[in-house]
Amino acid sequence: MAKLYFYYASMNAGKSTTLLQADFNYRERGMKTVLFTAAIDTRSGAGTIGSRIGLARQAIGFDAETDLHASVLAQDGPIACVLVDEAQFLSAAQVDQLARLADEARVPVLAYGLRTDFRGDLFPGSARLLAIADALVELKSVCECGAKATMNLRVDAQGRAVADGAQTEIGGNDRYVPLCRKHFNQRRAAAK
Image (cartoon, rainbow, N blue to C red; front, side, top):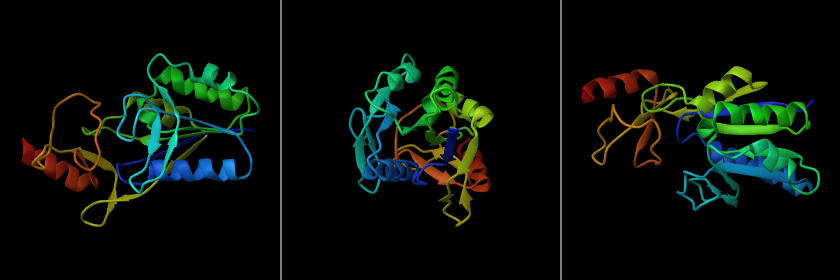
């Protein structure tokens, strides 16, 4: 039985690197994969999954209108695995499409993304993945104090915490800092 996996973490935990390694493992054995990434994230180039350590691979960009189930079924040949980067940007309906791929087409789906936004709230895609994924895997990142980072603090150009704004703002180390809950709350309180 194929499963729907959700690998989640704060920023800088190596989610994209882990996804690219899994993809490499399948392809090295001659198996075909399908990769998706959020079209809104163009930091590594449009339709590219890129990691901070320099690994990159082309992927299909998805937006709110993309039917992931149909996209995968339209591919030639047998698909061994579907890998999704930036899974927090999926809609609940798209997560259900991925579950159908696992359940009906018997294709394993590995989704990688953030659990929460800069306010500590769940993203819609992450909420649905947490609700229905067969396996939840937390990848670890480290806070500046050495504890496990579970939160994503948005910062401005001067490094000060940002408490308000749109849920989605694409950025890397220039805009987000992974922190433990204690330091996340302290930095947000100091910003008010």
